[in-house]
Image (cartoon, rainbow, N blue to C red):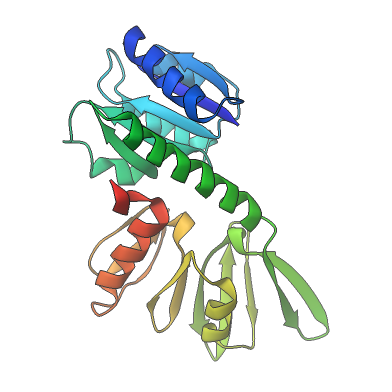
Length: 232
């Protein structure tokens, strides 16, 4: 795995590097002292430890730009303050480590990050086959943004197009399994594509679907579990 470490303090970079190697001896580790250096690196990162309070562009701004080209990277903020914890969700942060942290805490977070990365790679090939008349279409679950019921049909909206077929949303929900959530009786969303939410809507980029009041608490729990934030 390729692990990135971005922190303006050399001692912190060294400490993080030792922690990573202590738990992942075979990891390839790339260190950066500024967000600009990180953004210029063409590496395909699996995990990134990113400081927030840095000279120049802070880590939160860097993370927003980083996410444009590194959507699947496990992002872990490492910072001395907690005030940015809620903003961390906006950039899909996996965890928020507050300095100082113990070696055991770091090991736990890294272990979960590695396991999550492994599970995501296994999920990449999971797919559903849709029957449309005499045609069949294979759709990767990871490419499904959300699905909805429309005119007695199920419409699957993917990252590239939309497909409609005769079927039941609950059947799709059952096949999709963990990682998807029924926000409303007429909508099923892929949690990996959620960018923000409020009490009545869930957003996947520019797309928005209804979130029922009854489902709101369970949705928040499911999303926190999916992103790994429930074990701070």
